[in-house]
Length: 83
Length: 407
Image (cartoon, rainbow over all chains, first blue to last red; front, side, top):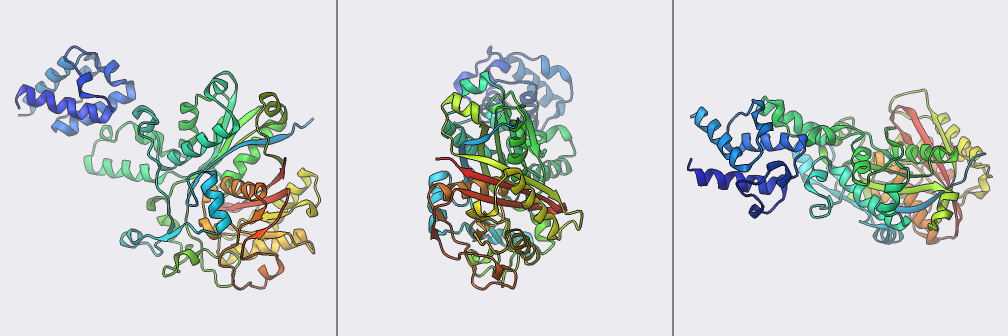
């Protein structure tokens, strides 16, 4: 999957689920602040990513990811590992 | 010294309307909210009859993080409670700075349970169920959601007493206020309407199968009744101490002057006469009123053969030769179950405030027990200042409330 395609897919899914404008998502923005995520919201973000990309996110690394740029990298790693 | 308990606000969302005004019009015009839902037959239901109402859309009203924990009936309860708080003149500033509580009747939350188990079976991974399901699935879902949304600081509790849940919630709330433990409580009852919530109820042949005439299917006290029709929604009353209401300058609509309760100590589904009779007598004793003070009896009568018969006997036993009008609003709404005890207080309040008694629809021929009661099949114009409302439930739980008008 091309990088931009991945970014668009992540942003569209997150914007719809967490009811924000896509324009609010920028690479350096803080994920938890932008999406208004608490620990329960994080559970739903994981579900969304797993279902959108068909990957499994079992490690705890996701809880320490702060920016969207890091999230794209994390998802790309999972996709590559699955390939 | 017991304190007086008054009602200062009401709100409702039911098959008769989305607010007090719509519901008053439906009651006055004897409009039924019952339909035939073919999708229930496709699922394998014995009866496709149900009350009809739409789930209110709260997107844009509440945030995603508030809505994600709310099942169907919590949406109804939010709508009803918002109306009740507004009518009581209770704003967020007041809720933030006082110990306002919530006691809400609810006794199931089937839809999210079904969906979470379906997801687990399909995906074989509990982490894919999502965060909302656990909070949507619990019986206490309504009180937990509303207490967080409105940031309540008083008692926070769900009352699960089968089809008397809403009535017990109001009764127990009134006791807490009487004894000075709370000043103001949001009380009510909510009932989910989705088919999963009542498929097992349908399975014990409790529902009417008069499917060719949906609006005639719920016929409490009528000789030819053949079962109840499931309904739902939510109803909220704001109750508070008289002193609190006066201090706030709140509209004082009525006084809860009697709460009676009992348990049949008998069969799990078949009601008897003694248990309900004791509940009625206790409410009258607690209220300290004579039966002749009661201008209207809002019966529990659900349109089941045995239930209506035994309630008719209990009412006749208690009231003797004095025959106030007795009706069951379930003839219009179907059985609103966990919500019914609260909604029927509001239906009765609306009638009392507007000087009429809504018709007991479809009461065409009495049986030998209902013939002993004064049951109007058409609306009557009547001024009354006190009513009694019965609610009974599986397991033999009974609740009776007596409410007095304050003008």
